Image 1 (cartoon, rainbow, N blue to C red):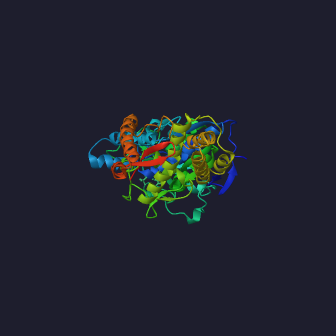
Image 2 (spheres, rainbow, N blue to C red):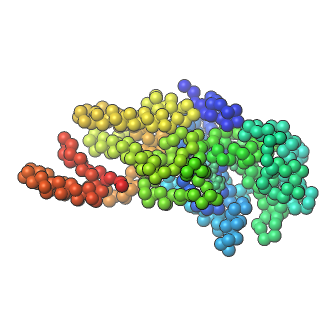
Length: 466
Ligand SMILES: Nc1ncnc2c1ncn2[C@@H]1O[C@H](COP(=O)(O)OP(=O)(O)OP(=O)(O)O)[C@@H](O)[C@H]1O
Ligand SMILES: [Zn+2]
């Protein structure tokens, strides 16, 4: 069956055929680095990381470009309030984002361009737009450059809006615009602000322009997939599309948007003050469990955060993990090169149906646990290998170097030896029929967060997270 995705522009699920055989070009709107990431930002990162991994599994070379918006009103405001340089704010938060993507197991992008490194490309794009009559320099001498929305008949087609119904664009000085809906490509220099020279005077980039310039530079005038959160469809992506297409480029062929991480139904957002930062969450659950939580829902649906749903996700992940760890213990190393089951592949081919794909994974655990209970080692091992392949595609393989031991860096072995000594004493007590002592030992272990299970092969233990 073919790969297909929901395309925001056509508002339908379309077969995916890349521009160049065997290769997919993917652009994702990355961070505006005015603050460290909250888990909503990383949900976007994880969703597109799963997409990328699935495309790679399907045999494509993926060229993945994720930008960094390192100059912006919000960054300037933070710098002013802290009394530091704008680039100190950008650098600090850039590193926090990089660390968060890494912690959550997102593969590094093929290229990660920064807005301030691409001013010549932006000037060239503005020149093309001015020459074609789609952009103009403000007549008030401010140095602002605007896109003329009435000059471009397709304006509104991505977000499915009619020009007559659109509100005024918020950026720029309304007096300098020919039409309130025109948006700023370039912002003329204001006193005390950083600026770069252009043929129309010094200034700094508008947010929309930079993405068009960087996507085109690295992926070409026409490329396969443009992604981002659904909050960016309008105005950001509408404007990116308008600029590039009005300039004569084909731009993105498919538009994919992740749903939002919300709290109490509202977008998690720095400005709303309802952000949960990554270190706050990774104190409660492991990074791999957070990745499972953020990736488990369909990428297009909203995900409303609650402590309870986070815990449930962590337990669900532990069920998958515990099964693999047991198979590993009982049947030896699990191969990591078997194909994923057809049903799992079909779910991901169909607009990245992760919930259906995970249902297949959990069915494997149920079957695998029955196999283990029956002592069918060989069957359990085969199921384990398929499960491992599925989890690897989702970036969740507990036995991968990314996650194996991420929790304990060698401590697990030491604890295992200690717990074994204690469990031997418990076995001795049971043999003596001293059940009070045996139970006390088990209860003491439970208090430490160590759960003991008696199996036909002897007692096993595992860490229970509260
Ligand atoms: N709550 C969220 N849920 C899912 N994706 C999000 C969320 N917030 C931001 N994103 C996505 O993360 C990426 C980077 O976002 P960006 O830095 O522009 O954040 P932002 O919208 O300015 O955040 P904030 O509103 O917190 O200031 C974008 O693709 C954006 O759509
Ligand atoms: Zn963008």
